[in-house]
Image (cartoon, rainbow, N blue to C red):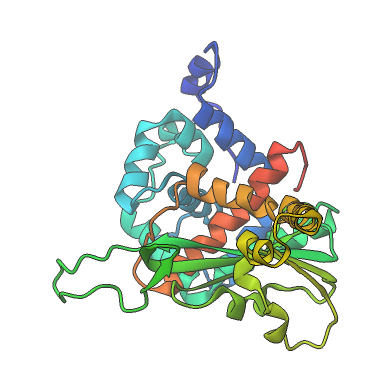
Length: 324
């Protein structure tokens, strides 16, 4: 997709500084593999032999990513592109040539196309393969973890019921209703290489075997993954360095030397395992993914794969890496 320089661009180029949004979009524009993602979508996209000519795939991908990063509705992202110079630049729309922003219905149908064919998972996998091929992702160790994403528990709707695919779970002393995003992250770099989405009441330890790579020799996790080796059935011998709850071995060792030694061991495990917290910080605090966006696990899974693919690229760009 080619971008043309307009009089508006000339005017805006005289500004003293760029906004943080514009800097973020320029960074993500440079690092996202638009060509590779377009090739993933192309076999499923209308050719336009009949009826109205379809929008460019890359433009629709750019519009979808704006929606993903800024938590916008279909109508909201359409309005935002009309309103924001930075977003207009990102999508490459030139109003002087008569181009217009794809409408909300077009975006909705495009997202449905991706969901129906599981293309977001392929995009996520392509980013993981790219990071690995560029030497950005190490191998040999994985950190497993999960986060709860809450869903509306209100029954004030036509069917008088909550989303049947979401469930409640108790964490510590508080109850949550929603889903879980389970991730397997590289122990060396923190990049996410596997992702699975389930209802919130599915135990983390049961999903963990799906998050491991064949060449992983070491696995890190919090106390929720104790006895994880009992669930892994691939026959590969691994070292499971799972954090234990502090009170467990404190009762066993007391407060003597043995306790201090065990505490240091747990601290070293935590220093590696904590890498996943930065990934969750990106998707929850920077991309604002604290509530589910859609009804059902399938649509939210597609959204999650785009978010974690973006988080990987964000970390790569922030560290000064070149992933494209």
